Length: 209
Image (tube, rainbow, N blue to C red; front, side, top):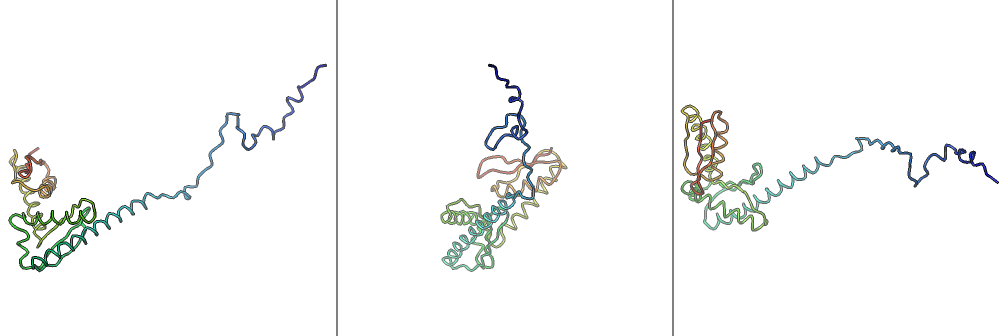
């Protein structure tokens, strides 16, 4: 006896065409993604940047305080008077000693003593924090005055080379001093600058374009 299954095969309700929970929809149609309200999305990038900046400033302030303590003990040992000021300039701590009568001895010829004292202070900071320091030390405004003179020199040489052509080399300088000159030359059109030689005789050369 044969059985007629045609009605059974086609007697499918609309509810049965919907995949049940946990079943895979084999119709080939992907469900539309649920819309996300942008107001619910929290952008934490700005907060992270602020935290990084605050951490960096705190670290530099700590460097300055360590350096200040070290230099205060040194001044007492040398029996020198001086006021120690702490500041932050960009990505480095800045410590200045001013007000004493004999502070010129801490500068020395062409800042040689000051450079050595700065390195000692950086080492003291590194020994305390475990991180290399780029701290800047100034005594009686010597570095500030030196920066101003070098900037003016760089501008004058750049303008002279621009007008006369050719190239002109300056006296050997420290990396910090060369950067000041490079920045000054870069502000003058028609010329550019390079560093030539090896330390400690490395110098800036200004060249016409």
